[in-house]
Amino acid sequence: MTSEPGKDINTKTYVLYSIGGAIALILITFPFGGVAPLDEPKVYASDGAYYNLGVPVGISFIAFINLLIFIVSSILFWGSKGLFKNLIIDSSALSFVFLNYFNYYVLWLVWHPQITVLPFLFLIKYNGASAIQVDFGQMVLIAYIYRIIKRARKPRPLSGLESVKPVDESPQPGGVQ
Image (cartoon, rainbow, N blue to C red; front, side):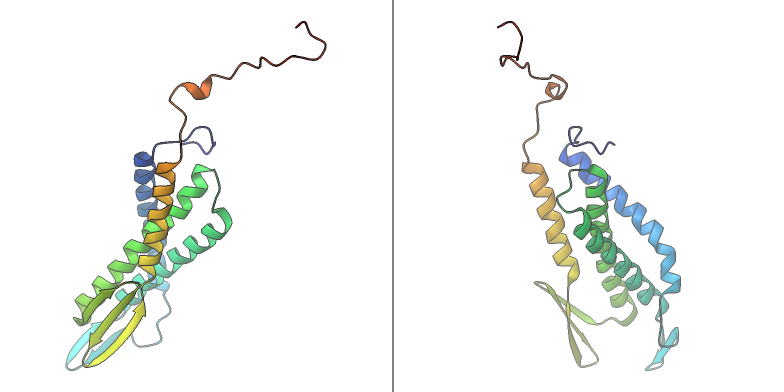
């Protein structure tokens, strides 16, 4: 895996690298879930049931860290030709999208609210209360898909031609013509 602009890989391999990078990024940031700031008690009692808030808050915190990595790397490296820099952007995007939706799944497992996915929004109903939340996962997923489509449409040199240098047939100063 090189970061030279001339030594580019195909889109399928790039997507596999970005999935691998997302898995690695999740594994690297996963320990930070234990240090997530929690204002309430870790175990919450409501209606005779006990809810452990540590797991959903920890996953949300890890997702937030991955979102910050995506935002900062996008600001710094967007439009870069380097493979490694682009993999940082796309791996952090995929890791955030996975953790975002995994967090909503864990919330559904813990509290069993009614969750409706709308374009760029979540509508969550629980015990008669409703809340609308912005779905950053959809926005980041759209940015990732845009980047992959743009990468797939970029013209690539035919294999083997990148090693052949064109012959300079222009007249040389002071030489025989």
